[in-house]
Image (cartoon, rainbow, N blue to C red; front, side, top):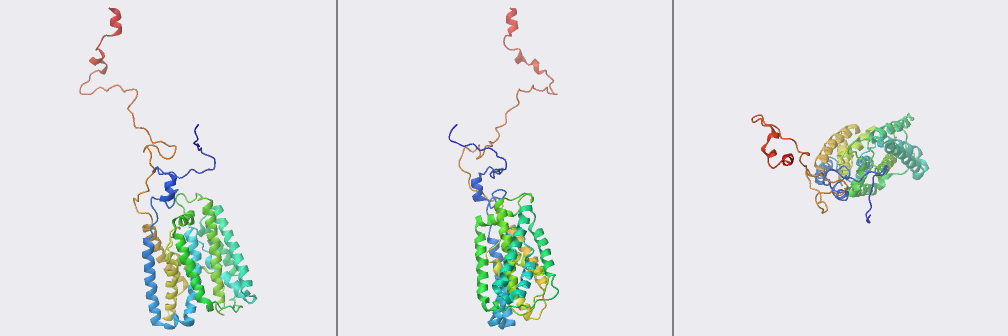
Length: 409
């Protein structure tokens, strides 16, 4: 045998992706966003650019209307309060959007935020670190437990996180009255820095997620064929990290809510915060199916909803979080339809050229079928109905001397 190495099928070893098109796996890695089951071509981003321009235009219009209605809301203490509102919503939107990208949405972000707010309100007199540390640790452990359920049992994230949300609501309902914050930390004094930090995380995360290799890994948990089929160890690790990070971000949002003023923290279930968070993530242009998303969408969607809430308050309108969340969800589902329809690879996108060869043998061991051959042995000619002549009486059979005739002579 020569220096070549022959590869055989091994138990537990998945074959390299080799679709019916015959394109080698090395080419698929550069052509397909999902090499195992993807479509030829790469995700398009023009739809995200257009959608984010629409969000920007709507935010500018609402900011102008707010300035006309109540100019004090955009300067001084009013601006600080507005920026902190945006940070709280932004952390929740990041928490939901992170898990949406991995196709395992976390519906427990709202109850987790309320539970963390209640804890910090009770323990705030012990200091920020003493109150926030245990809450963040519990949130991380809870997110890890949720992640293990999702990736080990391979169940939908929305179902597992809904069960987790129910458990957190039980904890919240142990308190029968509102809790007055005991700490003296006021995050509004650093609202500008907090907002800049949120904006940097949102934009850098979007830029990082726009890299094709990163987007492919982050969205690996997204089902492409039978949803019961496991997507591999990499998908499990990435999804677990997203669920843990999502739970911690939700806890941070709750802590800011409990620390910003002396208003009592009500023991509400917090599901309205979940609806609003998922609605913001969808409104930002993140696909409900996972993987696809924009760059500035989260920042613009949070600014849009924050300014709208301030404008509604300035006009004296009573708008609940349920209503805002439902509207964001409705528009966000439209955004998902647009992202999936116009963000997918173009129809008929040409793949990269296959490496040169003889054109008949692919990169694998499977060779193309040979050209069809005629029947063997030859079939006896059929007798035509128009001329019923016996084929065995054809003159050709009588031509030439016969061996037995020659012997008789």
